[in-house]
Amino acid sequence: MELKDAAVLVTGAGRGIGKAIALAFAKAGVKTVLVNELPSESNAADETVLAIQNLGVLAEKVLWDVSDFKATAEAADTCKLWAGTVDILVNNAGITRDNIFIRMNEDAWDKVLDVNLKSVFNCSRAFLPGMLKNRWGRIINLSSIVAFSGNPGQANYSASKAAVAGLTKSLALEYAGKGITVNAIAPGFIDTDMTKKIPEKIFNDLVAKIPVKRMGTADDVADAALFLAKSSYITGTVLHVNGGLYL
Ligand code: NAD
Image: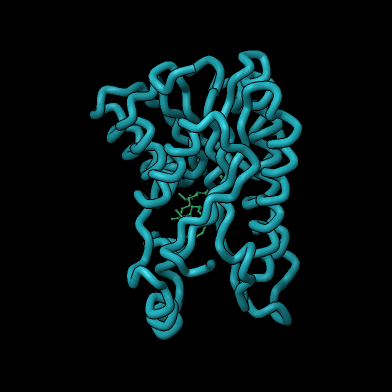
């Protein structure tokens, strides 16, 4: 399949990395981009959809919580109506609920695991059958540098992102023979709303440690997603996009 014929679904695409990925695929000339967001972020999703439509590409907003298995299965039917088979699935939606481990409550653990990890199960489970039918597909999951380095205050988040890397490799092995590649991107320190929450002192110390001496941009990550979508011989890999922060 060529990119011009592909339908892409990007979860959490109302802002940040997800929005940049959705726009990068639109600029690359895909057929349709489905923009997922939480129902509460409907306006943000509208902005992404409009930006894509302004590029002359079909775009639709599909609002649901990707951590909800049943809602994901129902949304898959809606996506089918809008776009036919989803050929490229980008599991981007993610959250943080940071705290030192001794103060981390059960809700912070469950919520982060549900949104960051279970969502990848939910969406892959819902959209893989269509890819299998066409014997072509791309699944691109957002992991993180902290899956590999660990990070104080992010036990829940780093555990969820390490699990995403393991899930990616297992799915890659299961479906490599069926024309479907499954890869992950592990961004480092990217300038989005998520990193704006980091206290100033920790933020400055972190940037000083990045070998290329700047934070990454959402577009840096989007370039990697597009690259993986175009590759048919790369599967089960974790592509690090971190300015040399973790080597
Ligand atoms: P962000 O907070 O700016 O955007 C996340 C988006 O996901 C938001 O639009 C939010 O509404 C949406 N979302 C959250 N929960 C959702 C749910 N249950 N269902 C549907 N949508 C949901 O974050 P970002 O920085 O753009 O991060 C995007 C991805 O990249 C995340 O998976 C994140 O963990 C990962 N990541 C980010 C960084 C970074 O430095 N920013 C680093 C490594 C990995």
